[in-house]
Amino acid sequence: MESVAMSWIIFMSIWAFAAMGFDKRQAKKRGRRVPEKNLWLLAFVGGGIGAYLGMQMFRHKTKHTSFRIGFLLLAMVYVTGILYLLGVRMPAVFEV
Image (cartoon, rainbow, N blue to C red):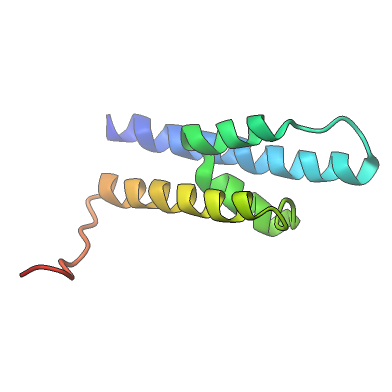
């Protein structure tokens, strides 16, 4: 089950990264764009890491506060999920 989840996150991240790059290229060429709701959907269903990395690498949607914060938060959720699936346990900072 863990390998399926990891594969899904990797696949969706690659897809979201590619979609960000494609949308940036289309924006420069004034071509047909990827709807923002599709970028959000890709990020939400597993591609948060790729969407955030694509946003940073392609300098795309960086002026939109909702994208900057939302994609970062989704990336953090999926990184945390990957660490959990890998068995990495974080120290108990607030342990009493």
